[in-house]
Image (cartoon, rainbow, N blue to C red):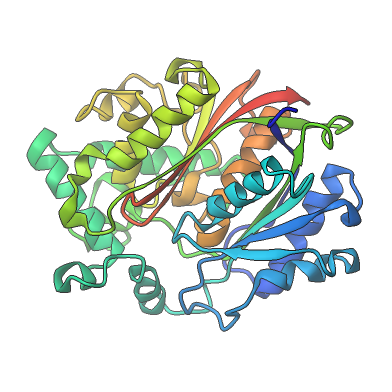
Length: 390
């Protein structure tokens, strides 16, 4: 018996300020994934929903919203998974476990969030709930403030990262121009991102508006199948590795710049898949704030610790580079509907590896990495995906 699991279908709504309800977003993504998978809804054995919520919507029991996609889903087991900004990956990994345990052959995973109907202050407060609440200092920090502290600490230890952060922002906005599903379809030049201005104000010094990801609505979905269930699939991508590492919640207990959770998760994923960083053709990673992407370069092994800027200076992570990062535009420009993010990464990686990425396509892609992070590098999910059948 093989424990290989495959993605055989994907669904993905637009990300942005959308009129659809949470339920409508879930249903749209679910139906698209099932359609592409080419299986009947009755063949789905379980459904998992990645959804953070934290008071953003009144739907406190949203797992069975997926059932609205088709009457055949009635009586299928449904579970909502929540792990902060990594809720989508938590749902995927739960689906993997269901298949590998033998309890399911086909699983539908949907990630979704509805955020833009709330004020920026409300969203900031909701997201801050993913921080450590039992310390008065940490409890009082928003996530922009947390990553401002990270940028300041990086500057003190390694040198000013602001130029690299601006290049990351400009890169991801340029990539989003090729993604019709992205929230932002406006080129944002490096020069704009580099300077503080009325249009690019400081949000939490030294973070500028251009360093911060978006408040977004949206949903994404994938169908996971066991090897036997995926035998006749028109398209399939093998999940070569799926590693989850969780760290202490209090930042005071960690050296954040060491980025140990992400580094461990990614290294374990490489080892499980039998590859190294040099084998990757692309990566979709968690650029909630530009300092995070900079640190992820180092965690991926694209540059030594403290030298993440080299991945930019050498062109490695650009669309025409050796290992393009965030061809979708990333959270920075594609958007960040929290529960959908991890599923979106896997859905778009599936499309890359099956030659369906359109203008985003990286020719000949065979190996992709996704890295989805919950909290301040607390919940860390690294997947390695391998092209199998296009």
